[in-house]
Image (tube, rainbow over all chains, first blue to last red; front, side):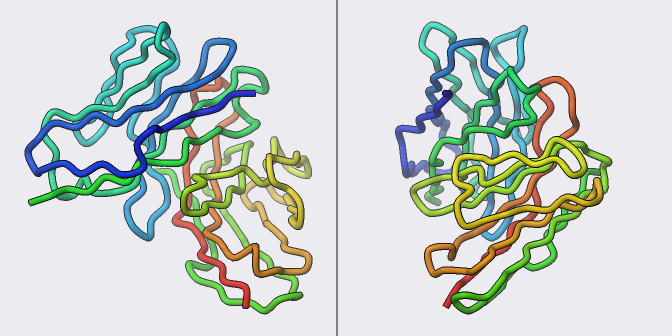
Length: 116
Length: 114
């Protein structure tokens, strides 16, 4: 079975500084990887996804993520954070079998705090 | 644009009640999902549905059931609510096909069982 680890429960970053959120996955075959963001009281919004091809993927709101098969990682980055980026971030992996219809496995989330 | 609507943002029920959480999507998606979200545990899959009248157990189905009579609607049922089912419940839908199709989420229902 697949699993996702987000090692950092909380991260505090100053506004304007760069950001990297870590995600490690465990899955035997080629994973389908996603990053979602959740603002307080809201549902999850898709930031970006990786399926195949270029290992550096661009997403919305200036985010990008890099897939590294050798490290089983899919870290999320942003060069300069804004106060509005404060939120909960979830990494998720989807299995290839079942066409993805059998749900995602989520990490436990990283809470991002932005300092002025 | 994709729209997943959960009928209630906040819900308060009593122990032993039968509780219905409703979810409607307007994208003609085949796949629908129910997750619960708890602090420190992330999202955990309760049930999912491949298509109308089809349902499969997820990771934590105990104490829950689901109904999918129409393609656009997926209901989560707590047969006899208990306090340990107090949680945030998130519904999602997804277009059937390649596994990289993303799930689209509703805004969630925060359920309190007293």
